[in-house]
Length: 135
Image (cartoon, rainbow, N blue to C red; front, side, top):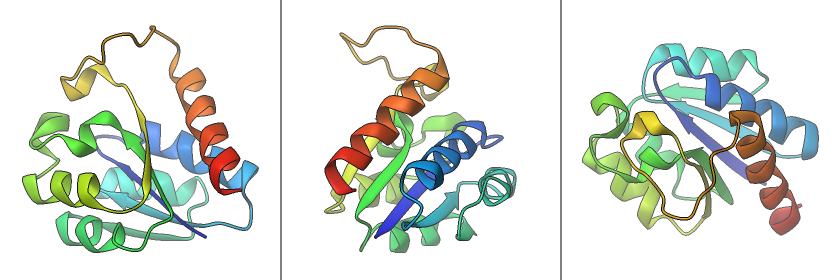
C-alpha cells in the first residue's frame, strides 16, 4: 500500500501524519513529498520510507498512490505561501487516490462547517479515516 504525505513550510503537519500512518498502518510504504527540503527532512525523520522534494516528485508520486494526506492547500494552486504550484494542485486533485486533507489557516482556505480543533485532533481523524478505508 502506497501512502503519500505532502507538506510544506517546516513540515510539522507532515511529520505528525507520517508518525500517525506508521503507527496505525506499519505495513504501508510512506512517501514523504515536500514542497521544500525542510518539510521533506522532517517527514523522513518521522519515519517515512521514501522522500523527495519539489514539483515533479509530487506530480509523479501521487499517480499510483492509494491514499494522499496533507494540508488542504495541496489542492489549491499557490497555497502554502506559494509553495504549491498549479501543477502540484492539479496532480493531487486529479489523482485517483482518496485525499485526507487537514484544514490549515496558513493555506488561506476556510472549510465551512469544520470546527476548530487542535492539529493533533485533525491528524488523528485523518489517519483513522485512512486506516478504516484502506487498512
